[in-house]
Image 1 (tube, rainbow, N blue to C red):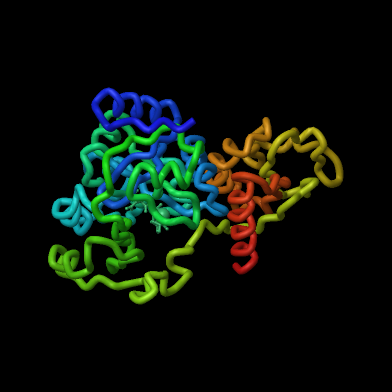
Image 2 (cartoon, rainbow, N blue to C red):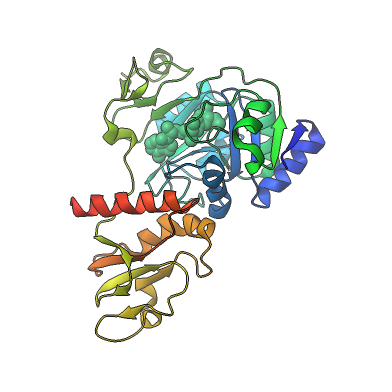
Length: 333
Ligand code: TXA
Ligand code: MG
């Protein structure tokens, strides 16, 4: 059952407790309602994708209650600081290089070296994040492919019982997602148009802002830009039923029957060449571990990463989508 809670002090405190405990909370921002989880907790973030029924893992925005909370996680350059000063809290999201010691889950960033950050301008969102004490990962609170929600009942209509708590804070003011500005490269680039315009951004940083989306269709101009995704440097072999010498193994479930070609058992693989996404066969746990384990095994001394079969149901569909893309991009090297 979904509980729709009036956004008063007591209920925000309860919702923050739920975020800290790994739960999902839908909450209002000034743009649209977000479906939030603790950004530091991979399994909680996996729950967002499961609830949205996204067939793929796209990176999502980590929301902070203030700049200081987000500075721990990304390299803020001069431009980012000046823009945060002017537009935060507000509907502007920055893409910045992720700090190597950031505890933000690799599922939030979909394995990318950059992270999307924003401080929303809505008192309920700010209180929820501050009381949680952690950054909150949140895409729009709708099922994949449906319209973005601007009122609490849109959230329940779209997500049904998949969202346990909705903090009701009235209609979202803008009704349009935040502007996404990539500040990780040499030039600032708008990846998604929103309430904050290129002109407003240019007036602060005194630089030209490029567009990477089609102004008419609001779609990415070069799919390579928005669809950039994690690509391993060595090949991947999917649906593996055994391991060859020199290969690493990314397992799922029991490895009792996984043998090494030519003799031996998967259990004997060195620690550096073996990770299990979920020994118990739990797809949410597997999703949470996916990108970090791929990266751990992605090393020159391995000829290939053999990946065991993962059921193509629920969030397994999104896991398999990313594995297929990773396998294809490795082949294209
Ligand atoms: O207004 C908003 O931004 C709402 C509210 C809830 O804050 N959130 C939202 O999140 O729209 P989401 O996850 O639906 O959109 C995030 C956008 C996506 O287009 C995603 O591809 C892009 O930001 N994005 C996130 N991380 C990225 C990264 N590291 N590099 C490039 N694009 C990124
Ligand atoms: Mg969305």
